[in-house]
Image 1 (cartoon, one colour):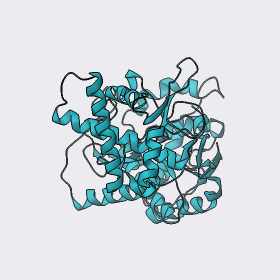
Image 2 (cartoon, helix red, strand yellow):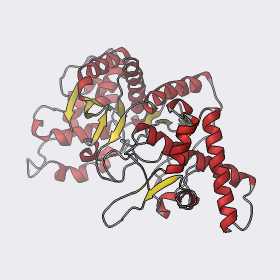
Image 3 (cartoon, rainbow, N blue to C red):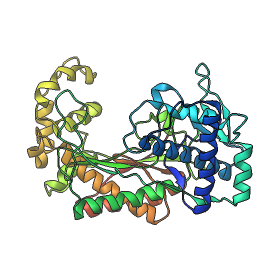
Length: 412
């Protein structure tokens, strides 16, 4: 896999009559090829035929899009059984038939695709591209970018039940659409539409699918006022050394991070002024900032922190052999205005406030033509957009909370 060989996007589809006719012709020829070689013993069932057509449509449209973008670039795809057997509840295109269909399309008789097999030992990923017969049809039909589009994700607003003990997430809840859910959906469609049209690339050599730019918003505990964070983008959950390999408009990204988000949101809910620059610097515990940061966030999100935290605090605090003072009491004293929030399960409520702020930040930046990739209380932007993005983050936070925020920039 060479640099900028982006991954297969199963949402690519035909938009115009000319493109649909081209795809239909390829599908008919592929089915005739299967029949001629006896590759199938029976006709596909109706549901399987529909899925087959959607799969071939996505493959052909992706190959054409890549050819129009850069004739020397390819589409990367993992054809391992582990990857292709994963559940894909939305479009189901990624399944075990994909490998065989691509193989058939690259056969000498078909020649609609070119194919380079991956090599596990070297970490190379399989790639495909438009073959000679497909290229000739692109020219004959006069196909351009306007003939292609991306299918919109249908599941951008999710509501989950409360997470059972021992589980990583709660079950999805089927909900009725309301003006509120339609408003959330409209915001997500605006953001995703902007991301789909953006030039976002992973420039490293790892098996990372940089076509996954669409976001979904997940609410928790059966409430549209809890959680609401954004998930789904390929950059979310990546290690920092991989994030630094991302470019937007061929510029390396920089991270802009809200500081002390939960603490400042708690002061906002308490309608109290913020008397500090750094809410994690507790007097007499300045050298233990990493410890106090962890403790404060646990105290704001857990009902049993006094039972779970002291067992680990000796390891977290290396500056004294023993803890000679009551750190919990000092935190309560320093943060007295928000002490009523300690020991409560407020995490999902803080996440909701945080997500509302991030949504408005993204929408305002998109309105200015700036691509921003969210990671909870942080965004990635290209370096040249840093100042404008930081100003927007500070202003939007104050609009929501009536308090000042801190935003730090980090070159990755």
